[in-house]
Length: 113
Image 1 (tube, rainbow, N blue to C red):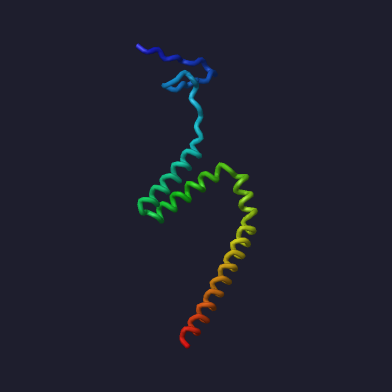
Image 2: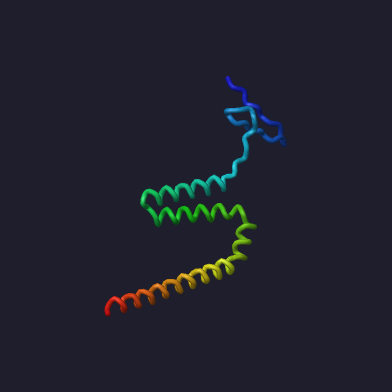
């Protein structure tokens, strides 16, 4: 027969894990769920389900970011700088491609003679 302790009114019940005598730790389910979602998204992408995998991984990343509001706020404030840098980079690439196209036309005109 098993004796079950009944706490007095107002006393909290202390649950213990089955494996050890230490109290059960409260786990951070948000981080575990976010990590699992990102891993599942990666697995889907590797197995060929790229669109679904990318969507699941993005959802996991968004879930992970919910736990870090200060970081999200700093990223949001820096978005204009990131966009400016990306625009400069794309402008430079466009210049290189345009220059390569002009060089190609010059080489073709020389070879046609």
